[in-house]
Image 1 (tube, rainbow, N blue to C red):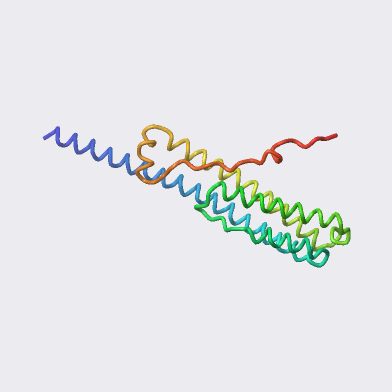
Image 2 (cartoon, rainbow, N blue to C red):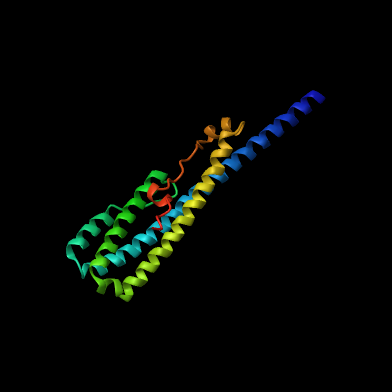
Length: 182
Protein backbone atom coordinates (compact mmCIF):
# COMPACT_ATOMS: atom_id res chain seq x y z
CA UNK A 1 0.00 0.00 0.00
CA UNK A 2 2.77 2.49 0.88
CA UNK A 3 4.57 1.69 -2.36
CA UNK A 4 1.44 2.56 -4.35
CA UNK A 5 1.06 5.85 -2.48
CA UNK A 6 4.74 6.71 -3.07
CA UNK A 7 4.42 5.86 -6.77
CA UNK A 8 1.26 7.98 -7.08
CA UNK A 9 3.00 10.85 -5.27
CA UNK A 10 6.04 10.58 -7.56
CA UNK A 11 3.80 10.44 -10.62
CA UNK A 12 1.90 13.50 -9.39
CA UNK A 13 5.18 15.37 -8.81
CA UNK A 14 6.34 14.46 -12.31
CA UNK A 15 3.04 15.63 -13.85
CA UNK A 16 3.18 18.94 -11.96
CA UNK A 17 6.84 19.41 -12.94
CA UNK A 18 6.00 18.65 -16.60
CA UNK A 19 3.09 21.10 -16.53
CA UNK A 20 5.37 23.74 -14.97
CA UNK A 21 7.96 23.29 -17.71
CA UNK A 22 5.26 23.54 -20.39
CA UNK A 23 3.87 26.73 -18.88
CA UNK A 24 7.34 28.27 -18.66
CA UNK A 25 8.09 27.41 -22.31
CA UNK A 26 4.77 28.81 -23.50
CA UNK A 27 5.40 32.00 -21.52
CA UNK A 28 8.86 32.45 -23.05
CA UNK A 29 7.55 31.69 -26.54
CA UNK A 30 4.75 34.24 -26.14
CA UNK A 31 7.24 36.85 -24.89
CA UNK A 32 9.23 36.38 -28.11
CA UNK A 33 6.02 36.66 -30.18
CA UNK A 34 5.08 39.84 -28.33
CA UNK A 35 8.53 41.35 -28.86
CA UNK A 36 8.31 40.63 -32.59
CA UNK A 37 4.84 42.15 -32.70
CA UNK A 38 6.18 45.35 -31.07
CA UNK A 39 8.81 45.58 -33.79
CA UNK A 40 6.03 45.27 -36.36
CA UNK A 41 4.06 48.09 -34.77
CA UNK A 42 7.11 50.37 -34.74
CA UNK A 43 8.04 49.49 -38.32
CA UNK A 44 4.50 50.31 -39.42
CA UNK A 45 4.78 53.71 -37.73
CA UNK A 46 8.08 54.32 -39.50
CA UNK A 47 6.51 53.43 -42.84
CA UNK A 48 3.67 55.88 -42.09
CA UNK A 49 6.24 58.64 -41.48
CA UNK A 50 8.01 57.65 -44.70
CA UNK A 51 4.72 57.91 -46.58
CA UNK A 52 4.33 61.47 -45.28
CA UNK A 53 7.85 62.29 -46.43
CA UNK A 54 7.07 60.70 -49.77
CA UNK A 55 4.16 63.10 -50.27
CA UNK A 56 6.49 66.04 -49.64
CA UNK A 57 9.09 64.69 -52.09
CA UNK A 58 6.42 64.39 -54.78
CA UNK A 59 6.20 68.15 -55.04
CA UNK A 60 9.95 68.49 -55.58
CA UNK A 61 11.05 65.55 -57.73
CA UNK A 62 8.49 63.37 -59.54
CA UNK A 63 11.08 60.78 -60.66
CA UNK A 64 12.39 60.29 -57.12
CA UNK A 65 8.82 60.11 -55.86
CA UNK A 66 8.12 57.20 -58.24
CA UNK A 67 11.29 55.39 -57.19
CA UNK A 68 10.56 55.86 -53.48
CA UNK A 69 6.95 54.84 -53.97
CA UNK A 70 8.09 51.58 -55.57
CA UNK A 71 10.52 50.96 -52.69
CA UNK A 72 7.85 51.57 -50.05
CA UNK A 73 5.40 49.26 -51.87
CA UNK A 74 7.87 46.40 -51.23
CA UNK A 75 6.86 46.62 -47.58
CA UNK A 76 5.27 43.61 -45.89
CA UNK A 77 3.61 43.36 -42.52
CA UNK A 78 5.62 42.15 -39.55
CA UNK A 79 3.59 40.19 -37.05
CA UNK A 80 4.19 38.10 -33.96
CA UNK A 81 5.19 35.02 -35.98
CA UNK A 82 7.47 36.81 -38.44
CA UNK A 83 11.05 35.70 -38.82
CA UNK A 84 14.11 37.76 -38.00
CA UNK A 85 15.11 37.72 -41.68
CA UNK A 86 11.79 39.39 -42.60
CA UNK A 87 12.44 42.19 -40.10
CA UNK A 88 15.95 42.66 -41.48
CA UNK A 89 14.54 42.89 -45.03
CA UNK A 90 12.09 45.59 -43.91
CA UNK A 91 14.92 47.49 -42.23
CA UNK A 92 16.84 47.46 -45.51
CA UNK A 93 13.83 48.85 -47.39
CA UNK A 94 13.44 51.66 -44.86
CA UNK A 95 17.16 52.48 -44.91
CA UNK A 96 17.14 52.68 -48.71
CA UNK A 97 14.06 54.92 -48.75
CA UNK A 98 15.39 57.27 -46.05
CA UNK A 99 18.70 57.57 -47.91
CA UNK A 100 16.89 58.57 -51.10
CA UNK A 101 14.69 61.07 -49.29
CA UNK A 102 17.73 62.67 -47.67
CA UNK A 103 19.43 62.90 -51.08
CA UNK A 104 16.39 64.70 -52.48
CA UNK A 105 16.37 67.03 -49.46
CA UNK A 106 20.03 67.89 -50.08
CA UNK A 107 19.24 68.71 -53.70
CA UNK A 108 16.26 70.88 -52.74
CA UNK A 109 17.05 73.17 -49.81
CA UNK A 110 13.44 74.39 -49.80
CA UNK A 111 12.33 70.87 -48.94
CA UNK A 112 14.96 70.52 -46.23
CA UNK A 113 13.81 73.77 -44.60
CA UNK A 114 10.12 72.82 -44.85
CA UNK A 115 8.56 72.55 -41.38
CA UNK A 116 6.57 69.45 -42.31
CA UNK A 117 9.75 67.80 -43.57
CA UNK A 118 11.56 68.59 -40.34
CA UNK A 119 8.64 67.30 -38.22
CA UNK A 120 8.40 64.10 -40.24
CA UNK A 121 12.17 63.53 -40.01
CA UNK A 122 11.94 64.02 -36.24
CA UNK A 123 9.09 61.49 -36.12
CA UNK A 124 11.12 59.10 -38.23
CA UNK A 125 14.06 59.45 -35.84
CA UNK A 126 11.75 58.79 -32.87
CA UNK A 127 10.43 55.65 -34.53
CA UNK A 128 14.00 54.62 -35.35
CA UNK A 129 14.85 54.78 -31.64
CA UNK A 130 11.72 52.77 -30.78
CA UNK A 131 12.57 50.12 -33.36
CA UNK A 132 16.13 49.94 -32.02
CA UNK A 133 14.79 49.44 -28.50
CA UNK A 134 12.27 46.85 -29.70
CA UNK A 135 15.07 44.96 -31.46
CA UNK A 136 17.06 44.88 -28.22
CA UNK A 137 14.06 43.57 -26.30
CA UNK A 138 13.43 40.94 -28.99
CA UNK A 139 17.02 39.68 -28.98
CA UNK A 140 17.05 39.60 -25.17
CA UNK A 141 13.80 37.64 -25.12
CA UNK A 142 15.10 35.23 -27.76
CA UNK A 143 18.22 34.70 -25.64
CA UNK A 144 16.07 33.67 -22.67
CA UNK A 145 13.98 31.30 -24.78
CA UNK A 146 16.95 29.76 -26.60
CA UNK A 147 18.93 29.33 -23.38
CA UNK A 148 16.02 27.60 -21.70
CA UNK A 149 15.25 25.19 -24.53
CA UNK A 150 18.92 24.24 -24.92
CA UNK A 151 19.22 23.13 -21.28
CA UNK A 152 18.45 19.64 -20.12
CA UNK A 153 15.69 18.50 -19.51
CA UNK A 154 13.72 21.24 -21.30
CA UNK A 155 15.71 20.41 -24.45
CA UNK A 156 13.76 17.14 -24.52
CA UNK A 157 10.40 18.67 -23.69
CA UNK A 158 10.36 21.83 -25.86
CA UNK A 159 10.14 19.99 -29.22
CA UNK A 160 7.11 18.07 -27.91
CA UNK A 161 5.27 21.39 -27.69
CA UNK A 162 6.58 22.73 -31.00
CA UNK A 163 8.83 25.29 -29.35
CA UNK A 164 12.16 25.71 -31.09
CA UNK A 165 15.08 28.14 -31.00
CA UNK A 166 14.50 31.48 -32.71
CA UNK A 167 16.93 33.50 -34.81
CA UNK A 168 18.37 36.76 -33.57
CA UNK A 169 17.95 40.02 -35.43
CA UNK A 170 21.19 40.91 -37.15
CA UNK A 171 23.10 44.15 -36.87
CA UNK A 172 24.18 45.62 -40.17
CA UNK A 173 27.95 45.87 -40.35
CA UNK A 174 27.75 49.49 -41.49
CA UNK A 175 25.61 50.40 -38.48
CA UNK A 176 27.74 48.53 -35.95
CA UNK A 177 31.00 50.28 -36.85
CA UNK A 178 31.89 53.62 -35.30
CA UNK A 179 32.01 56.42 -37.86
CA UNK A 180 35.31 58.05 -38.54
CA UNK A 181 35.82 61.33 -36.69
CA UNK A 182 38.39 62.66 -39.21
